Image (cartoon, rainbow, N blue to C red; front, side, top):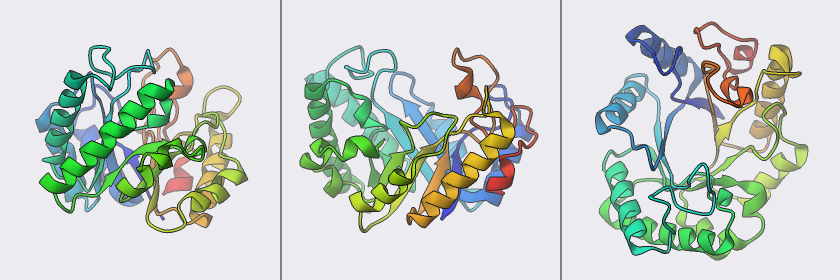
Length: 277
C-alpha cells in the first residue's frame, strides 16, 4: 500500500518556491499520489494544474485529479449557479469541465467526490445518471484514462449507487474514511467492509484525515494514523491519500479541519509524520 497526499505545501496559501519544492521532496519520500480536488464553482487555472502534475511526475509520483460537483453550503444542488443536476445547462457545463480536466490526462480522474453528500435522493439520482453519461463520453474521447467516483462506503452499501451502475463505471473504487470523526480512526467494521463491497479490483482511500486539535493532540493523532494505516493495509487497500500533508493556517471556522496534516503549517514535522515516513 502506498500513501500520498492532497497538494498541501507549507504556509499554504502563501507557499513560496522553497515550500513547494519541499512538498514534492516529502511527497517523493511518501511514494503515493499527489492529489488535486477542484471545487466546481472555483475552477483551478489550467497552468496551476499542469504545474502540480509536472511536479508529481518529476518526483516519480502518480497525479490524481478530482472534480467536486456539489455545493458546500447546500447539499441539495449542483455547485453551478444553484441549478439542479437535472437541468440541461448544468449537465452541459459539467460535461464541458470534466472533459477539460480529462484532457490534462491525470493518472486517475475523479468524476466526482463524495457523491453521497447529495442529501436529496432525486437530485442524487440525477447526478448518478450524469456521471454514467460522463463516463461513456470520457471513455470514447480519452480511451485508457482511469476513472473513479469518491464516496463514503457506508452509503455505497445502501444499494442506490450500485443500482445506477457505479460499480461498473469505476476503474478504481475510492472511498473516504468518513463519517468517522476527524479525531478518530475508522472502526474495524470499516476495514472488513471495504473488500466485502469490492472483492476484486483496485481500491483507494481518497481522503484520510485525523485532526490533532482538542483532546486528540499530536501523540493521539500519531497513534490513530498508525491504527488507520495498518487497518487499511490489512484490508487490501492499494493506496491512501491524506487530506493534508501540512496543516493550514487557523483561518477556518472549524479548527479541526486546519490540523489534519502530519506536518505543521510552518513545515516542521508533527509526531504523526512518523506513521507516514
